[in-house]
Picture: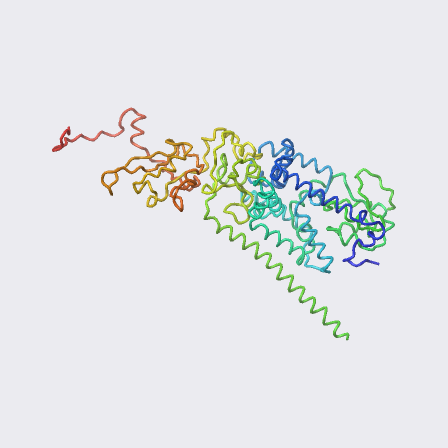
Amino acid sequence: MANPVAQAGREARQRHGWWRSNRFLILRRSSQLLILLMFLSGPLWGTWILRGNYSASLLLETIPLTDPLMMLESLLAGHWPAWLVWVGAAVVLVYGLIGNRVFCGWVCPLNPVADLAAWLRRKLGLRQSASLPRSLRYGILIAVLVGSVVSGTLLWEWVNPVALMGRGLIHGTGEGALGWLKGLVAAFGAGIWLIVALFLFDLLVVEHGWCGHLCPVGALYGVIGSQGVVQISAERRENCTRCMDCLHVCPEPQILREPLLLQKGTPRVANETCIACGRCIDVCAENVFEIKTKFHYSGAKK
Amino acid sequence: MSQQREKTPARRRFLRDAARSAAGLAGIAMLLGLQQKQSQARDGLALRPPGALAEGAFDSACIRCGQCVQACPYQTLKLATLLSPLAAGMPYFVARDIPCEMCEDIPCVVACPSGALDPHLTDIDQARMGLAVLLDHENCLNWQGLRCDVCYRVCPQIDKAITLELQHNERTGKHAMFLPTVHSAACTGCGKCEQACVLEQAAIKVLPLALARGQLGEHYRWGWEEKQRAGHSLVPEGITLPARGVKGGE
């Protein structure tokens, strides 16, 4: 029988202990924090690991990284970017080999905000919500790209909260911790209200509203990584007790339906919307899920 | 009892839906309001970093990475936020606060990965971030016949971008006024003059080029330039009349 939503993961915690039932969450938060600290090491301590922000950056003064959506917008708006941006985009395409929306789960600075809203939803029992089609994000992605051609500007960047969150936290100038704190307010400016609005939207209006339905950045990362090798697999799905814990915590629960609940096709949760957060692995008391590569042969019963 | 049970979920649903609609609408209203406010915030005239492409081209080229901002050793450059006078995330500076220090190696341009800051700009004196304009004659101290000269003194291109032009002071009848005069051929728009102006509000301000500059009609020909080019006047010279009653006259 299905467990209560608010207690998703309790069974796993009781059976496997705290670390085993939270490890991917902790690893993910560490990854997000580590990347933010790599950006901040320059302004805070004078050692530049990453220059720039989540839109484009330079790793260790040599390896460029570019947000592919940002570059596409710029290209379509009529600017032929300099080679450094192209190399940066190529590096991100290499990221696509890893797979899916790993960026969303492990890098994006907005993910903790969205997760907080989802967590509060579970705890407060705000389960049902207004519905939006999940495919809306691809529509927005196309609209952003076409809009960039028409307007000759980077259309999405007027409101892009992902970039805004990054800029707000990193904010470029201001040496030392005090300078950073002082600059934080100025750097966010009114942008903080956009983040708050987004949080409230996720909390009160649409479940997983932003990341799961609207964000074109994540949509593009999903498309790029759709052939990636890292995949979540419902390896021992025959053990599933339908406690629903994984569906309760999954930001894209619709993708678990076929491989897990219906037990159709391969057990791989091979879908470009999976953010590979591994939270399903954490909360499953029956050890159904594993992270596997695409090439792994699954012995699971079909 | 059963009636009670039926009533409560309906009321709950109503309250929940009302709260959701209100939150959704508030969110949308906030977004639109911010956008609206941004369009109103354009009173501050933001200046671009050196080497920035022309306004439209810069909008499409800049990928908002902030590396120019991080490269600037004087914290001149800022990234626009949602309510800044520019599209969020783009670099600008406010001359009155921190002007461009005109670094010889132009680190902001070097740092730019996209080419939005033109890498061909290697001589900072060729930068055109804007154009200084002495907007307010009525409050400029030099125009009152005082010797302030601060804008002229701080100009990195002293005597090229800003000169002092002497003019008879009609008020005192015996002094000269030293009028600060900006020359667009040399002014880089660094903004040091605007920052240094001693008035409460600067009398000299750096404006974006599109705003500061007029444009001559294609058909205009300056007679004196044509004369120089052709070696002689293109129209018949006027006759020279004798000047009478003036000592030393012709």
